[in-house]
Length: 354
Image (tube, rainbow, N blue to C red; front, top):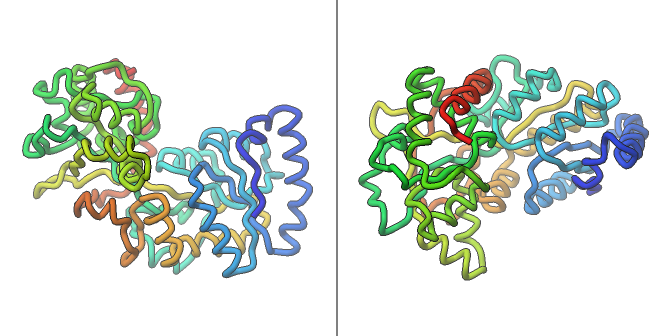
């Protein structure tokens, strides 16, 4: 498997990037002629994904050339490359990034009975068949054991309750995970209630928003606050670690799945996914790769390699994720999250969420 690192990508607007672009564009025609290679632009930065690519090549003979970068960086690269882009697939985390790619007109429809049958309708684009979710990551409430009784917890909305004043920490409002969560709530609650929620959450902060998901539950374990919101796969990696410090942090954190009562929405589960790009030089190979990602082997890589929830029924869960317990995810379509993102960001800004 060939790999172009993010270091090369970051220079795409300069000399190094120009060379990289020329090299990739130069091989575009050979990709199409041979049909034995695909160019994957991915913001998934997990070493375990390498097994996906090597297994796909073993099964199909199609080589995966990986170009890595952050989601927004890769989107800008695709925009800059235009019709000459050698990219076949854009793969990223969070439906917000996927929606931005779709709004920019980067994807092309894929009419695949395999994808439509295996992936639940709420985790793919049913209107245009342009993007698909291949794994989910539940964004849940995490709390410090011994400080919070799970019986005190209920919903995302309850995080705005004054009883949590000075006990809550979160990532910044510039983070796409929090933006998508707010956009999802906006679709459920409407603008007035969502803005009231955001203001209540800000009032409950124990510190100014900072750091990533790991920083949040690490701070909770250290006693900086009592609870936070984070993706389960980050914590699961600590439970699976051989590092004693991470094991200790894991032992102090409890996981609570919000909005589970009858009549409530279910927990917010975002996706990692993507689609075939409209100028893909090896469209057939790209579709084969997307279909492969729904295979039992690939779904098990997602589940066991990166502690994500598989989207295909019957795939095995990572043991650590399984230990968190079963839960009900929201069944509302993720297609509604993207259109609400801009309003969600404005609401977070007005609420003073830094």
